[in-house]
Image (tube, rainbow, N blue to C red):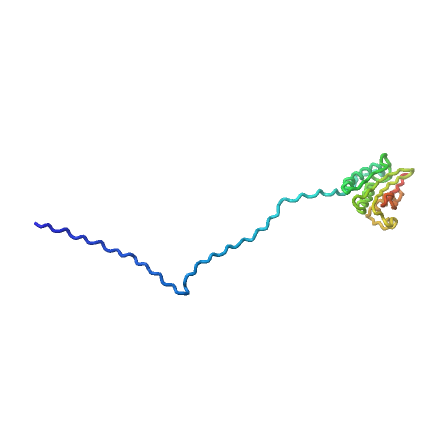
Length: 212
């Protein structure tokens, strides 16, 4: 008997490729322009920071010495040689710093005067302060102590410009001036304060103290 032919196989269905949409033509006014690169903006230069390291400071100039304070009740008299030597030693660093030559004469032996230690020290500081205030740096000065019968004389002399009218300067001295402080100490003993021209060329102030 005749065999039937195998059934024909159906061809696979044709797969259509997805249609791609055609780009719409751009109008003349809508043509895309090429992107322009923006110029890089330069950053402002940062100012250099100051160094944080502090510059070394110049050494401070020596200051006038503090006044001599009384520790308690004082004797009504003192050794003028000892007081003057101690006060001049206290002023020496400032004098050396300003290039001032200075000396103390006549203090090689004790000289008793009827003044408290703090009182005489205050008078010496006042007159030494006047020298530093009223004469230029480098001016020489001398302190001298002379003891005689019934009295003692303490001299402060400098090589500065001097005082035009010493007598008027003494009369016009204020209550808290160096001349007035020294004058009160001298007069407390029955003595006096004298101001004139020094042999060095500047001013000479003498405290005449009565010791009897």
